[in-house]
Image (cartoon, rainbow, N blue to C red):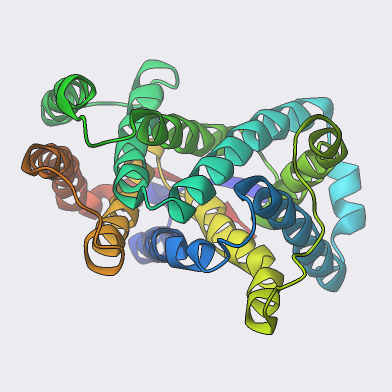
Length: 315
């Protein structure tokens, strides 16, 4: 049951607890997503398109099992509507582009770019929340967002060491995905199930029109086969946590906790992958990060007022 709860009418502790659970879910999701580059790199014997198809299929199987255990399949059928299907079709389009780009970047060693893309995603979410959804903004946020926009422009002009389409695609699709999640009334598992079901129907089209096959390599190792079987969990767990948090936090606040993902990606890029980059790119990365950190700090300072906001509580 979906209910809008004004916590000014209830115990402030309850509102704060609900908010903190959403914060923990968001941070955990972003750490898993950031570190998953290592997982996809370990499966580099597959093509990115094949891994994308496997990711969709195993995600659907995992979600189907979860809905079966929870006995919520019939409830989903009763709740589904044309409006909800439309929202999740658009969400599915964004998430499949995001998944495909992230897998490609992970396999080809463009981790810094994918991290930068996820660093820009909160900017996209905040901008859409402010311009399209009417979220309130402050002078501090406005200044920080202007700085970020200028920095991205500078990167596009001078960042010769970067593959620009990677971070632009990831930033736009993941930020847009966060926005669309505000428009659904489905719970995390049901929403993800609809999205993966839509994407699964597109796999035959991919197999016909693109040079991709789902046949396993003849020299595949048992360890690789075991890892491949986990791709459903690597997809479902963080996205479920992300959906849980997105449904309970204001969009402008939700975006700030995605700051954890690019930090994880930066660590993977520089420490694990040893990806080379210019000092100017790192400075731009730092400027964008500090700008979002400033907005995050402003949000944390106002968290005492969280109990006076409307928090969506799913029971």
